[in-house]
Image (tube, rainbow, N blue to C red):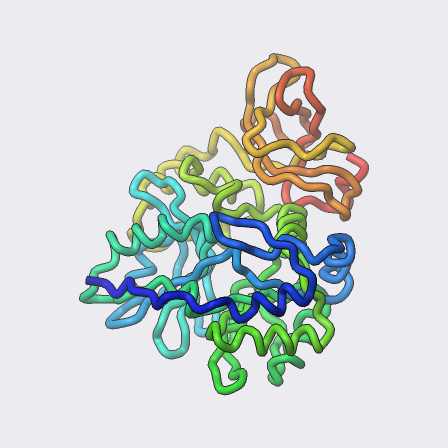
Length: 375
């Protein structure tokens, strides 16, 4: 049987530091996260102009080890883990046999042979059950490492500079999903590049939980401003990046989200061998299109719509989709959202929120750009 045991979580060593920084807490998938630190505009500005640091308590992590953990994980995701060069992680979807989403994952094949997997906290239970079902213990063992491995995010144009100072090791410029494994205080950490925070240069740092407070303190001392989950969501939406629990759910076929958001090449390989759910993905590729696309929505001064608000064609009165994530965008100076829209209404089209006479929304391509501000 796979090793799925997890030690009882110790009191969060970071919690006093977050409270000291003024954190107000909320919940993501039943787990407390720092929502903000009292000044959302300053937090947003730090990521756009300097650097912000965030505890990624909205994420969960798994470890795989044993005889062949990389091959076992390779067969469960839509991307090429086995062909990834050393120091190159992969982003991918994990699917049911029917091609439905279990999680979107970031997977890193470490130098010591272990595999580290990061997922949205909303996907923790589904991922755990899938690994329990699909990973034979003869070839790999696995564990929910969410309490064992911490994840800190450092995002913004000065992120690399401040992270290098905090770690005492020069972090090179990295393509998205590439990673390095420097030492910090005697512990081996994994630093992976990301562009999820508004497209700015950024890094997710995975390290032993007992070392997280020391790195947080060093980053804060170097000049990184604490940033809450609320601002990270705004930046993610501006970057047009879907996440599990919002744009990606059990109802979603991944190509619906990835094809129109520029993430298809990053997330899905159409050349790899068999993986769970592949038949559905290949069938859609041969058909040549999906029936709906993830799009950007510009709402002007309208309030942010609730998740799953209907999108209506104003000419026919028929529902043509629904909303997912929404926020006020400082980048565009208006409310924006992501939502699924039937393919006959492309960029430049208009939909209404909630009803045929509801607030108007202009449909645009993802990611959002400053050129959308006048659309």
